[in-house]
Length: 141
Image (tube, rainbow, N blue to C red; front, side, top):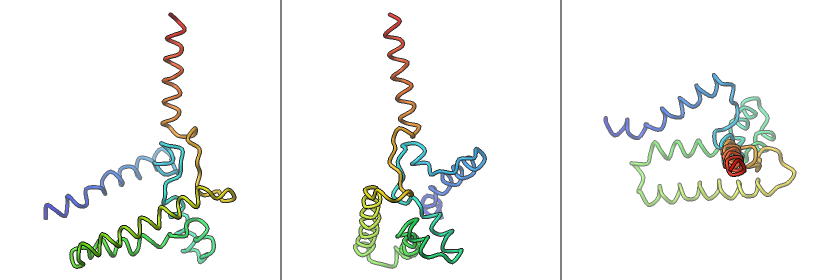
């Protein structure tokens, strides 16, 4: 029983993030919020929403691999019944697909779902603020 709680330990921080971000009105993913760059799964929630409204074309526009979490969840649930070598190979294929699609989407100039703008991220803003503070301290001396 203890192992099951350990395996599901990632649910608590994700759940807390969802609750806190909803209360604060933050609607972007934490990765994009922090770094200013969309994550590899950017658009999946919007894709599922579009699919549930019957719009497969829009779902594929938001993320062509929006369906990938379904087999990933099945694989996660069945991972002890499948040889570890097979499980690892399937995970590798899924991750490779996600990364290839991510790079293609980052390089595609006409799409608006995946964004690369590090200057909009919290990390860049904090570093810029620290830089300005250091410059101000140096200029005072």
